[in-house]
Image (cartoon, rainbow, N blue to C red):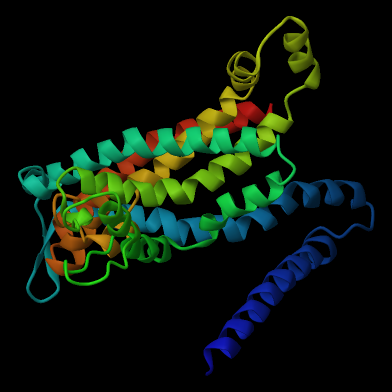
Length: 335
């Protein structure tokens, strides 16, 4: 089947199936299970209304159970076992975790992930907040917002390919197609650098890609929060003699701090799971390994499902507290 036709068919069947499910399940509930007629009509309607929300939740619960709960349990099981020939396995307890923490590559991945956590959320949120504030003060602000948000529409792999061309290095006797090397030589550099192989600095070059993508997300959320600030508080501060910097940092930012925290933690979760950028640009070489790429190497290159699953559990343990805190703050904001 042609891919375009297959995609169209999937959409039609998917949407049609959802509509059919909700329509016929409600019909069964109202006409067969609890009919709204006869002497018990009132009680049946009440019972039907109590069950109806679960009809809508059932597909989501089923999907979460199949695609989230089961993989977590299975990954935990695999992290505690060792694969044997003949598709057999045996329980080894925490041996996979002990092997994992004894490998220098694991600690390199942990160190780099912590570095990403310190840099990417801070810069993405700060630049997004700055863009949100400044774009609302110019006529062409909507155009600027569209340009800043545009990288969000690009996949991580696509963004990595774009930036890999920016960092591209050619021999000295050839024209440099990499923007960074072209600028470096233009401003007096002696010879082109292989930027992605420079220790420590190459991690920052990779982080720039994720900051470029996530700044648009932060800008959109924070722009909406800034527009929700009551004008009376800003006008009162101006009347009291506050300058623009004082209005922004002492009046506006404190009022949207809850939103800032939600944006920060959301980007933090993305950082903890970062894989595509590192895989496409360096594949974890030159001291750029991260946890998700380490997990991929173990699972699909070394075929070590035990250690690979153990590293997946570490990622989940790191993400879970931040995710819970993010949900808590989001609910707190909605009250």
